[in-house]
Image (cartoon, rainbow, N blue to C red; front, side, top):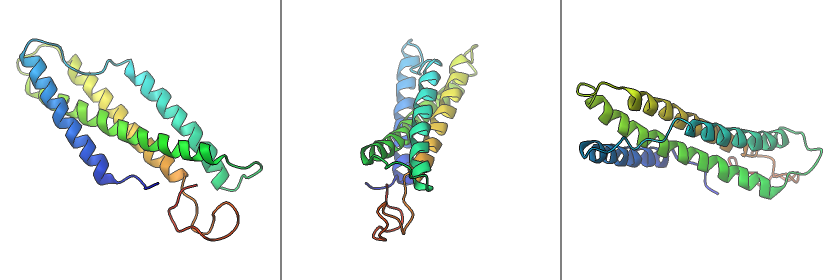
Length: 161
C-alpha cells in the first residue's frame, strides 16, 4: 500500500474547497441555508479520531517491541486504511468548510448573524485534526527498515506492518 501523498491531500482539499464555495454561493444567493454540517458532527469526528488512535496505538505498541502476542495482519491493514481514510475525510471537510468560510466572510457586511462563519471554523479545525491523526497513525504502521516481523531484514524503509 502506498503512503499518503501531501499533494493528493492538498488537491482533495482544494477541489472540495472550490465545490464548497460554489455550493454556498448558489444556495445563499437563491435563498437557501448554508450547506455546512451541523456542529454535532464534531462528535462523530471525535469518535472517528478516537477509534483511529486506539487502533493505531495497538499497532504502535507492537512495532515498538511489545510482541507478547502476534499482530493480526488484517488489523494492521485495516488500521492503515482507516488512518488514510481519516486523513482524506479531514481534507474534504477542511476544504469544503474553508470554501464556505471564504464566501461567508464576503457576506459578513450584509448579514447580521455570524453562526455559519464560526461553525465553518469549528469544522475546519475538526478536519485539520483528522488530517493530523491520519498522518500520525499511518506513521505508526510503518515498520523499521530492518524488521519484517519475522526477524529477517527483507523490508525496505517505509513499508507498512
